[in-house]
Length: 334
Image (tube, rainbow, N blue to C red; front, side):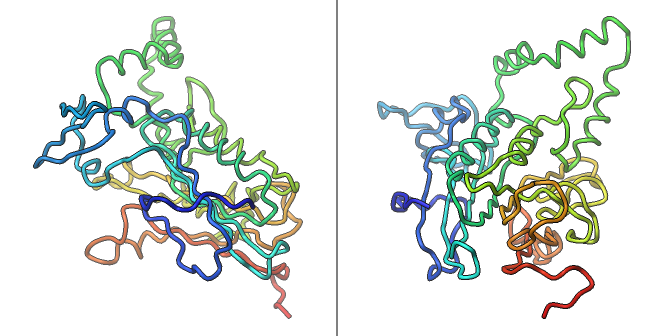
């Protein structure tokens, strides 16, 4: 791994390295492409005045923003673009003597295609890395665009969305109640943005991000582990990525929830993910090597919510990664 620039800023949204003694080098990429341009322009610098905020433009003249920042935006001021933190840790059991940890935070105020571009850019940055790799972070896989809304944006998005036109065509030509597609899409996408994307009828707009990550090969021939075997997944719930991301009865266990979810019908999202590159060369075929492969991932919802004030707005995740080839199940380690 090449040595990157020195750390020049601290706004990494809670990302930090606990064990500094094992750090070999740190690389901070300060700009991910494909951001929501207008939102970034409107928030060059924030100066708070009570409950409202003024924006200081390039010429120094204060003016009101074209959208009123919500409370979360006022608390977490965005300066610059999204970043990714890449750290190489000394791990003697690794074949290369090190493990690379990649901590991205993809943009939420843009469409899924924007997040795909950012993910592909990160994969390009780490493609030549020969270490085992643990990619873990907030990928904001909501399937939606949370950019500030305006009348012109709503109109433009509708005019450019082929799904909207296709649904209207079905409605006009057949008289079918296309509103029935809404609960189908909601249930199919509930906490599971992976799988196949069926335009118009059943969209999974983030699916290509996972498809590209599953097909991705590092220069050393190794891949991210998508095997998801029952025996190596929490509670025996297998399926794609289940060994690195805990699955629930439906989809994955959510990592973020709104204040009101109405019994889990809405407002629960799987935003945070582990992608682990071990020593395997086939991302989905069972068998092969399990050294440095993910096992028994858990999302710690109860731990996060146990204190009166929750630990975080996103739930912690853990995953077991054996540093040596584990024995077959049913056999004890020597």
